[in-house]
Length: 432
Image 1 (cartoon, rainbow, N blue to C red):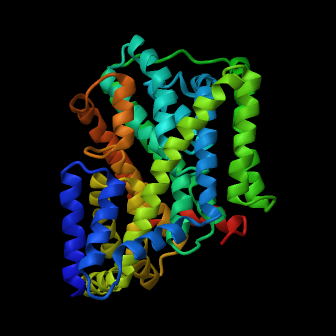
Image 2 (image 1 turned 180 degrees about the horizontal axis):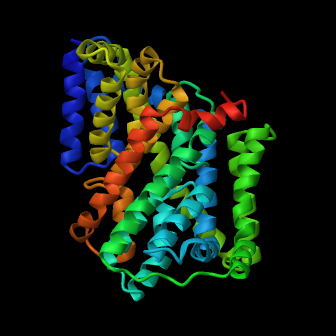
């Protein structure tokens, strides 16, 4: 009966997604349908409502709307432009200089805002026209922007790492945040390497080198924005405040900074709050329905059955990790990152525990893996935002995206099989 239920759950979800039903509703409907037809579950609507209510009743999740609001304030507050100027002063003189500027600026902005969508929009809207003016193909600039924007989900603060902490049953958010730095930087460097090769092959222009005085000037202009990283992560690591409290501090800091820069006024706040509320509602609806699906998966003993099946295939840790990565890459193509983390973390966590993989390390593997899905059709949110900002089409962007995909997958393999890359900083700061 368990496998009949899971086939019903998976089959109905695939059909609903194929029909174009929004992901949150597709997850909720397929879960309720499975509960209704399962003789063990009981009243489906009551159970689903309880799962959603208890799942969202979390102090940890309160950090998500705060970080979304902070990202909205930064997106409109002139922070992206100052970070781009600083990035250009640092790497603008390298081969394919503006591609490197795009990647570095995206990493910096994403690390501050915690949002890949906000990064693709803010950095892409500024860098796209600049790159095109300098002779870069529009599709290439869009591809670079799309892939670089995903680093914001790996480099903290990151909403999706908070969601993983919830789904995994309480892996330390501090440890996850610290673990994301080196893998996030590795992804950025991998993208830069590929961008440099492509820029050289296509004979894109090399920017002028910036003097040391200009670098210092741009750094000082960007310093107030960069200090948010110190304030947020410093407070969390030192124990001054929790991740949720850090998110509230980030909102206050971003608001004060935006008002000082005079990029927004108090009259702009109602629209910013409305936009934040709409985004938060979408995210939390996904979280609630995904928690319901996670419950039915656990109720049907699916994690244990999957664990036994995979271990039965092979005892090789290397092969099992490769299989799980392949599954997550496929999942990321068809499912948004938030429900994917909530649904598949409980499924794969027992296998990782059996293999001796640290749960913090697994969190980084999963998030990095699913970030690649954000750049792929048919549900790649960052892909659609990046294409929209660049005013180009997906078919034109896919070709320059391919080598950047390969770079991200190569970084994923390194992160998967070199656990020290993720665990060194958490252990250094005593978060493990």
